Length: 319
Picture (cartoon, rainbow, N blue to C red):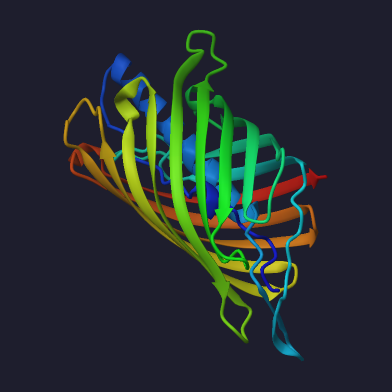
């Protein structure tokens, strides 16, 4: 089978960066920095998973000499423990996620996590994950922050070949700054549900994934609370068994519940991007990705665009 890197973003989401208000003054500037931190954490975590995660095995293999071969049964037992890390160097064209006076910057995102699968059946797999993230900027130290999260997720396969499945998850995350005067500045719960179809085009090294779902984010402070339906589309071209080129598109409609500027705020987010990944051995991946994210809100001051290329190294151990 040509699918190698196995992106798991359909199970966890490819979350889009939302807009932040371009306000002036000391207190408003602090709120702007908070908004940039919150959305950067969410978007980078999920985009890295797109480049280095896992994808379910489908029920067919394509061989250049034998053609398409259907599998009678292929149900690998998932490992109970997985330790993983990723290190990415990122460039952003709009560090503060504002409409005007954009400022670019380099920043580093380090991630370490451990996941535990207590048991699994043929069609049902629960997973508990603890994750730590670090975000540090080259010349905007006021944006530096860390995050910690715990997530419980479950997947149920709708078909025996695992080409259709549903995912449900709930994550609790806290964001905090190393600056003594700031400390923890945001915590939120994230409830997500989706249905996904993965497959491949017979006779070609091309595979694909389609996913639709919705999430609800509820936090403290509640300024960033929202409900958002979304759609993901991913295409993967398998250059060779260890190299993949993929492209994705994700439209998302965000309905804000407690926005201080508008009680009826609605945003349309569009994210498109591409990733080139190389997996020389099973548990090590190098990747380069680039993405464009556009936010089109009903509150005009929250309109913004951002481009963000990244270089990623990832490794994991599972047993």
